[in-house]
Length: 95
Length: 494
Image (cartoon, rainbow over all chains, first blue to last red; front, top):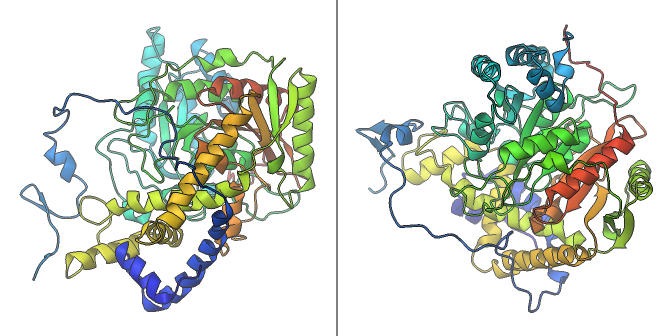
């Protein structure tokens, strides 16, 4: 499997990481190398094998649906790069 | 008490404290001085000296009052992946520089409840993604060990390289790390220390910066197997805040160290004899087999046929989970922000500036294998292969009590030697990754030196939640190997 530059640009956009034009070419080579090595997995016969979804055999516990935490606005905002009046501040989202 | 308090490991320091031969403040001060003196090793990102001394005084008061927990007053180094309340937690990344969690991880909270004293936060590969500690934004950690007659700096392994170096160079009585694909066991092997990855679900992941959630597990990094038994007991617990935490009582692991392996069946997996394995590692493995055999264990050849697929499957599963977990670093709620005109612009620039090259590679691989049209071919296939790997282990564990393998295919390598070749770096973890894929416990014990004088580890893998048996077998290897080599302290200014 080999990734081209356009695919790298697409997945970088999906991952929300800015990748400059020159870097896209380098990454296309690196990622193709890694994916080419991973490719050997396709030779394993997995017909009828269930995908593993949990490392331990447990059933998820249930609890009463009630609030267990909260009222910590200051703590929630303590590390925020920009806040105002108890809110996170972000650049404009729509024109 | 002798001047060199840092020569005491966890069990020895515990006993000295109990006999009032030394105080926690004296121990803590000695370690803080050793850390100061070992700056060239770059093992710590943050040293919490004032915090440590205050905790040591509290511990001394409790000991004087006849109280105190399992590790009361013992100075520990904490991988900078565990959130520590009000104390910077970076995960080795620029994107979390200056981040001060407003809560404490469950594992570290358990340690403090049992009286542990935090000396500081140790360096690591960025977001625990690496096998050499070279991907840290805060610089490479240096291995205290060097090859015979050579002054080249070597990597301590990774990702828990700072913790491994801290234990190896006696900068802490013990440390904790995390292991997603070998990040405790591989650096332990590279630094001549003991590292244990518990069963998935044994230690809570709550408050541990997430890399690959179905694989991550916290564990002890220590000078001896006994120290690992002590520390594991102190850090493990059931935790309702981690939905994959398992509600099984935590035993007193020290009682498992009986020194008796008679009648135990130890499996030797053929598939771990990888191509190009150095002859000294192969010879050490054979020695380990002989030690256990002469101690009365029964040696059984076993096969784990899907072993060679564990690593490529890991490099789908781990990046896929990482790409999802690391989506939270967006410059909005905490961490680095690089301003942009629009929200999308801010996200992209923040993540471009905040993540290093290896983290970006893995996020992009993960995003790709999860993207429309590729999910079945990559992610689903990897999860099926994971089932086969787990079944391999289940089958052999019907007939054996534990498995013995080398921990790594090579001893520590030089800083910069492998950074340009991601796949050769990934191959470091070929013997450690299968246990993560299957969720099983494993321990690395220093067992000998390579032909050029570097430590080598043997790995014991066990059944789920049977840490007691791997500790017992590990201690037997430790006794037989009587590994007492120490690195020369070339880093010391004093």
